[in-house]
Each structure stands twice: as C-alpha cells, then as structure tokens.
Length: 156
Image (cartoon, rainbow, N blue to C red; front, top):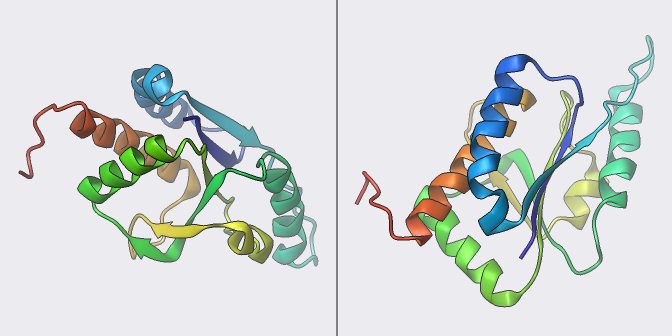
C-alpha cells in the first residue's frame, strides 16, 4: 500500500516542514508514505476564489490513479478517532489499494475533489490552517501505525 498526502502549498514555514518531516520519516518505509506538494494557484484581485480552487483541483486530481482510495480532508467530513484510523489503515493494507489524502489550500477543496473522494474526513470542527493540518495528518498516521504495530496507546 502506498499512502500519499497530496497537499496544496509549496512554501511552508520551517516549523511545518520540520513537523511534517519528523513524522513522515517514521512512516515512509512502513506505509510507503510520500508528501506531494501542489502549487497554490495564483490569487488575482477581483477573481473568485473558486477559480483558484478549480486550478488546484485539476492539479490534485492529476496525481490520483483510477484505483486509488481517495479521502478528502474537509471540515464538513466525518470525524474519526485514532483507533478508527488504525482500523481503516489495516483495511487499506488488506485491500491492496493505495491511499490518497487530499488537503486543499486556504480556500479548501473544490467540488471536483470532493466528488472524486471515496470518503471525507474532518480532523476537527474547528477550521484549521492547511499548514497545521499537514503536521496533524502525518502525526496521526504515525500514531495509527504505532497502534497497528502493537505499541501502547495511552487511550486504551
């Protein structure tokens, strides 16, 4: 199983890069994890944010293979616990499908991305800045993999 985080934005603050790298290094071998950065579409004055989102969507969707299992990360998605995430990762491994996690830019994901998604997950009812979500997602993947590998989990 390959796991890819397809994330809009290329110039992240040092703390985002450090946090994402910290956790991605821990999961890259076991999950065949990679972060794919999609350039943020240029925002033009007096242009609807939907135009930029559509450009970003085209770039995101071009990275998805037809048989990928796609999860859109969206504030309106379904919340799952870390234990549920671990169960889902186990199931993805058994299915042999690759997992593509879509993370939009500051304006979120376009409806085309939402339409292609097999599921939509929310990390919180709070609106989170997309750079922070990058770190949170990689940390949660690491935590879920730790659970799968039998490491103690403080919630059990």
